[in-house]
Length: 311
Image (cartoon, rainbow, N blue to C red):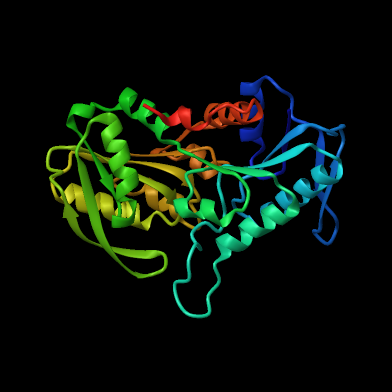
């Protein structure tokens, strides 16, 4: 088994390698003067089971191109099997046609990864589960829920907690977490006027006197979370925290969350944290390296991955 990474999130790749007690394969990924990507594999990978660890986070296009070229390099170096490990799958929010003459970019990315030569894909908390069907190769969608549940039980009195979905679309995810910790469920009903803006309309459920734990897959601008936190506190919640898998946190999101009424925002390291995230008073990062490392090990040994999430 060989582990390879691009420039997207090297600290995560190193943590996964440490968990598996394997060194990262020497692989040079650099840019020419015109910003073309150049890859050189500096170790023999002939006949090996290769895992390319590369979230396609900001800048998404650069990191996606790195992933495709690394996969191609591995295929041409005669690797036996190449698995694209994408802890964060960029373009996942473009999984359908929201209007006429618009693309389904998530499907295009799936096609690119497949045609580049990947034999299988391993990803984490896809924005929409049906994206697995965009691939014509085996795709494992891991869940950060076990890592979050462990952290919640360590930091919250679950007898006085309530799990909150920040929108109707995330109810299934929130219900699953609520069941795992034995807490009730509430839903924030919101109306989105335009992309990046949301208006909270109503709270479905009884949150008065409760510690609210919001759960979602992606936090981008942070506007939805901050508005939802305000609405929950107005309804009598004691405090509001949020557990989000992918901390995209674009633009002024970190400043917005830091100055908000959120007690804590807990994200994973699927996307490399910026310096602003690291120094924020109310943003904390959980490592999903052991989870992904265990999934990689099981995949290489042809063992069950789904059993990681049975509880």
